Image (cartoon, rainbow over the protein chains, first blue to last red):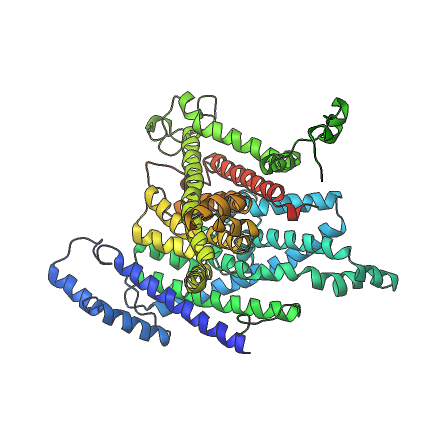
Length: 309
Length: 303
């Protein structure tokens, strides 16, 4: 319990660090957010700066920003007139969450299924096919894969729509592109874990007891084989979150990732900051959850803070 | 005890041969012997060498410049003069792919040099000096580590602005963290060993112990991490260029070529195909080499 409390405190600290870092970076950029537009009379620029509190002392801006963050208020967007960052995030979040969740499910089930199959058929044709797919999944960058899927499956074969959002068939290609890398990693880890576990004594005991093969694999082997997979969960969530940027951009899905990428070229600093902080907070939460799951699965790992403490 | 000169006699020649029959294998030779037997890694090495030759020497044999337009020859289908075709401004895609690969390789290998420098110094100091300083330095690393690199990289690129030297700076600022962790871990375990104690008794200073004794003994893990970071750096640069934050025209990288090819995709798919194939092959070969090096340099992983 004490360890979890400590972890929560450090998680809050990390989020504070990210908020401060993004704030400093965004204010370190030479020229205000409105200086790239066509030349305006100084009075108007002053007016705009006043409206967005850009004339306040930097420390006051920072404290105000921190205070608003505590209430989950990310401020107004500089580009989309009259809309707040919260509006944009709320609009994009369900799409991003659906995409991320589907990719997570596909990655976990697909990856584990592929890994187990490869391990059971070790050094047979199916094993080699899976290893080949895994290698492709690990090596080909997601945006290249996304573009390829979009072109060959979308434009050429017309199996699924290459762009857009709204129908079930729209989600297929983005989810495949997004989950290719985690599927490959999970399959690789599962295969290695299964091969390791299947030679152990307790599996032989289970076989000797006459248990069905499926029972042995699911109840006995898989549980222990998945431990390395759980350690991958932290990087996995990070990958799904940041992978969304480019997938949504390529497939033109109006989620948070796309807002993030377009706000970069628009220099819409509040959106960049808000998205970064949201992602950081989500990620820190997921990492915490992954750690807790890890201990539940493997009681040998004790969650102690520091040795002796 | 009484030892006289005639207590000793030379060994007969054939017996001498029998005693010292094998020469010692150095760490490098041992690793190379294992690496050589790994067909995937050797294949990766061959492909990487081919790609390097293609990108470094190739442009000297090409009659086309990567940046010069020819508006009479836009969007040509691949033929003998333009084996990869031309893009929407009539630029030869083969030349552009070769130059783009050059930039990607430069960033991949160059940023690893930066990571090595920062990571070794940071990790070495943190691990060797230990104590409160180590604790503080590790907390900093923990914070950086808990947020995905890509997020920092994007934020820093937004702040610094696009361009090749900023890519180096930003990748250098972020990617040293895994290196520092590995170096620290190695130093922590090694510094308690007897040979370090011996060196200290002989009067070696901190710097000498670190650079002459600790780091050479950690060379295996350092090489492994470096090898696996090259594809990461190449991927990050390609990603940045793909979303318009990386290499700026007229320079090209594989990422900006893929982004450019994507614009023309419905009608001119070859503009996408060749750069994408190159980047996939490059990543594949680098990953195989990295895995092979890990197996060869880490005796614990050997079965």
